[in-house]
Length: 185
Image 1 (cartoon, rainbow, N blue to C red):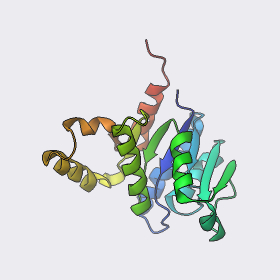
Image 2 (cartoon, one colour):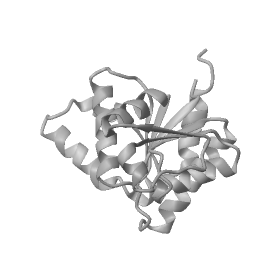
Image 3 (spheres, rainbow, N blue to C red):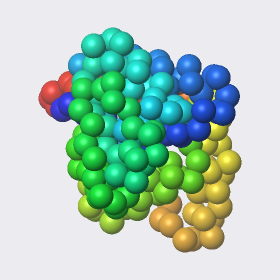
Image 4 (cartoon, rainbow, N blue to C red):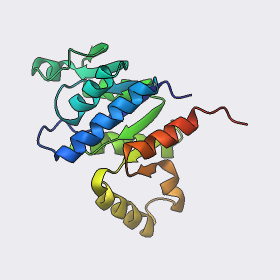
């Protein structure tokens, strides 16, 4: 059962508008499905757009932000709950623990770090939660090619692709998340 979805994404306000639209559709769809949004707690970039859309549509939104970022005035105070932690490590642990599934929108180094960590933890058996790469306009394509390259070089097992699912649109991600809500027969 998927109660909360952790979303990793960019805090950049300079991303292409199409990525912001994708983020808004994701936030709205999570709210409409009664799935809580867990995210990095910022009001900026794709993070802010996802959270705002979820809130606008009656969703429960939980942000987790380290104190040093809150002090830089990037914290989103217009959400259901804002949890302030001391370190990035503590933030990452809560983001991982509090989500029943992960959706990764376009992002920069921080998003890539979070993605690699949850894939690695899944590989090591630390969790079995679904990981959905939301590949807005092919954003993740170069990374997926690189994943193929490290598999060719035998740096990862051939089944590495089973750790995540690539979705081209929020709607494809919702189809997967909705399917996970069905009881197993």
